[in-house]
Image (cartoon, rainbow, N blue to C red; front, side, top):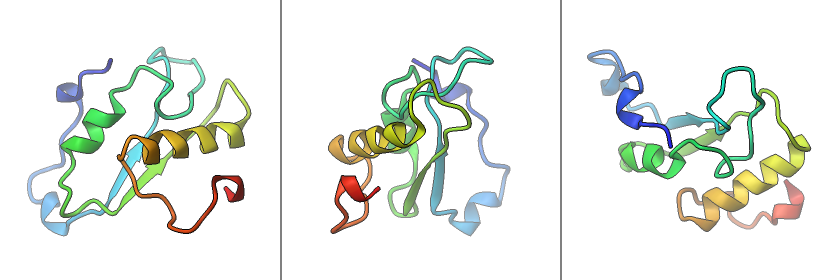
Length: 99
């Protein structure tokens, strides 16, 4: 798992803007290797999300630059992981098949 203490922190004063977004990726943590669905790689995604200020965090944005599997299947798997683990609410009233 990735050590979230090694991640870059926001520059002093930037936190006053209350950025409501957390941009996440997952994968094997090997440069040049494709991303995986969130939750299927080695990144401590749950730890990253839990480290965010829950009073400010409104959106968890998943990015897949490249993917070892079908891109839309990875999006659906990421959604299932994030909502299933209680790390994100998802779009209320939206079926996973609609994504």
